Amino acid sequence: MFDTGCSFGNFVSEKYAKEVGLKILSDSIPVLGAEIGFVKLATADSLQVGEIIYHNPIFMVAPPDQEVDSIFTFDGVLGYHFIRDVKEIIIDNASRSFIFPYRISDGESNMFLSGNTPQIRIEYDGKPFDIVFDTGNAKSRLGNAFARIFPEAVSELTEHQSRYGGFGGVSYAKVVTLPKFRFSCSGQPVTLHQTEVLKDSINGPLFSGSLGTDFVSSFKRLVINYEQMFIRGEQ
Image (cartoon, rainbow, N blue to C red; front, side, top):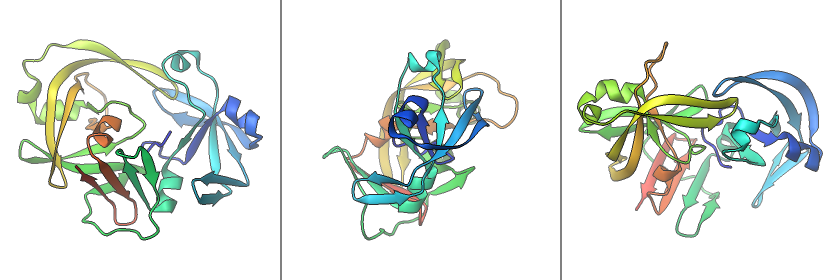
């Protein structure tokens, strides 16, 4: 899995770590996901992705979780450290491929990192809005910050319960579903369908939401650049 929302580095399942013989460095490392869980840290001599050979990668090794595994399973996740070090990745949806360009492209910054997680500046209803960019989510969702800033967008929608799976377990929340979420990113219009909006009150900072793989697949190609900090969609 290619996961811009994985803020540490790389994840692998415990089963896969044993299969390929990763070297365990330490165990019982607390990690915050849906809940606080514990992982091991491991390394390998190298990791090859296409023609790229990445030396001495560090992996968090996730233990099995029956509740989460019933929703989705994975062998591994490529996260922040890999994406940062390759500097630019192009997701070509037309050819269903990842491209790692030799020459890094130029672009105007519309992204910043918060705790190693990228936040993108979009425009909704004529107003700027910062939102998490998390390709580990199959579906985009909006948070209670969106509901408070744009109350007219959700005021007449019916509330229901939804569940989200992730590291550490499964969580439940009260949401409404926005039939069409129309916004622009770097001047490109985007429309996402059936986007859930979190309505629950949460202690602490408000959650803006996250753009997932449905956002990525709305373009023919998406350039993700961690050197000049921008994303650029091509339709």
